[in-house]
Length: 435
Image 1 (tube, rainbow, N blue to C red):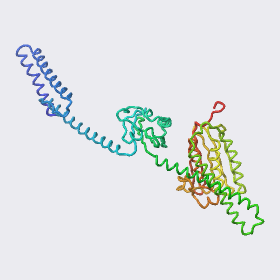
Image 2 (image 1 turned 90 degrees about the vertical axis):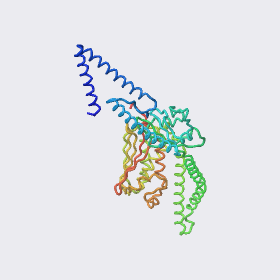
Image 3 (image 1 turned 180 degrees about the horizontal axis):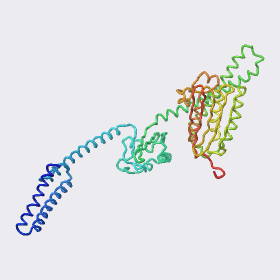
Image 4 (image 1 turned 180 degrees about the vertical axis):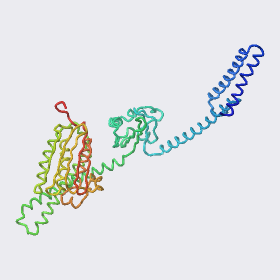
């Protein structure tokens, strides 16, 4: 018990005892006691009113009013708590100001919105990149300012594993990359980057590859044609010319396959991801590819097993999917030793669409797996030369699956075979027969 409270209790005891004694001497103890309590209650209300007026003042740093006893201690304690609160508030405000200054110094835009998209705060870079107005757009919905259907779909989907690229709503010929992170109660932290230069460089690279491939195709066709003509005249050629002729035909075929893959990859990279209107039946595609794979195997006599778990149609480009599936199946044939077993599994259900190719070949070292879908990357360059690979097959597969909202996963262990699996979302399945 504090000293002030003890003093207050002693005073209250005296206050009650003295009126009782005086009232007893006057013959009216109850009346005198009631008057004393009324005076005491009035004094307490007066002190409470002084406290209330002090707390109402706009200047919270003002000294508290003087008061005796327990009221003085209460006022002093409140004043100390108030000072501590003000110091903590100043520290927090200083930290917030520092964070705002640092984010305003960023070249990337930063925007905070609530779950519905109402804008709560953004930095100067966001104003420059997207044209936001600090005096008018507070509380405005961000999809009313970035009027791009792709952005609204991206914002509402809550699938933020991959960033979104759009044109700037305020700066012509500016390409923006947008990333969203969830925090709090589905609030959004949006990062906006200017990737115009990278976009232009990537476009220049694609155009260069496409143009060079087209330009190379014509002279290569001429060379291949003359080589084929010369091959028909081998009986008239000196015996020493046969080997260089075969080598030239082989290299010309490799160059033609490389140009074909480069053009296909360039077309996939530059085309829109519009495959929702096309339809195909993967089971039929896989049966045809199985026959082609058996023909490719030839004398090696691989055992190629096909398991079909669903026969429904899906939304997708048949030619693109044929290219993707055949790439991983033909790779399994090329890299699996003769007589090996290759199993193709197809399934479609609520968890999605899956095409997996499993072989019992030499497998792949784990360090190579993350880079297998890069252009021209080869886990074993010497074997790729033997099989005639271009190093673009899995890059093509990755882009085709991306165009279909899917992805490629690879599981492999050295000397224990590999599994390449194509994943597509379940919403691409077309229901049939009431399913």
